[in-house]
Length: 108
Length: 123
Image 1 (cartoon, one colour):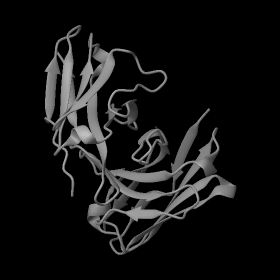
Image 2 (cartoon, rainbow over the protein chains, first blue to last red):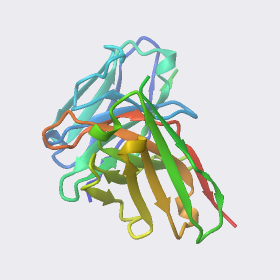
Image 3 (tube, chains in turn yellow, brown):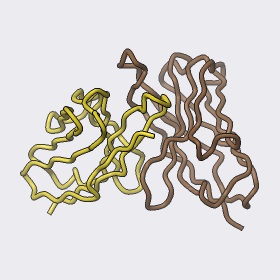
Image 4 (cartoon, each protein chain N blue to C red):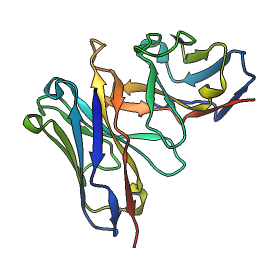
């Protein structure tokens, strides 16, 4: 089955840029989706199809995808961005969705 | 307002059964594929099951295949998950999630999530 690898944690100071990676074999050939989950809340879609943003998501959230790594970039990080972030793709061989293990973003 | 509301969770003994429901509102439920995703306490997200808009295509994660059954009633704007032979490792918050068709492959994102319902399997 297809495996997505995320760093367990990323720390960033307020106002700086956070980059959260998602590794997978030739992930650049897939559509990558990113979710934000705050404690006790349901996940929220923040980026879909590698780099598109749903309505209501700030422009500070952006995504890229190439080769074996997809990246979620959060510019001008705010305290309210502190959350767990998950990447997700579909495994073409099984046609099942797959989630990365999640990255905890800490705002220092 | 577009909304998904899960219900039916609770405490059940190992080997027992439970039926989860997800009520949809604010959108044309019959036009969307739906999924169940779960999250064990302190763990990450795990996809559980998928059902197409017309129920013609259904998928299950290997961890639940043969024990769980997904279904939907488009007339009632409702999604269901029948869970049998429950195990301790099925303990989790279960979310229903709408799949938003933006890709030609059908490998879409989950754009709307419910608040989740907790299932605890314990004696």
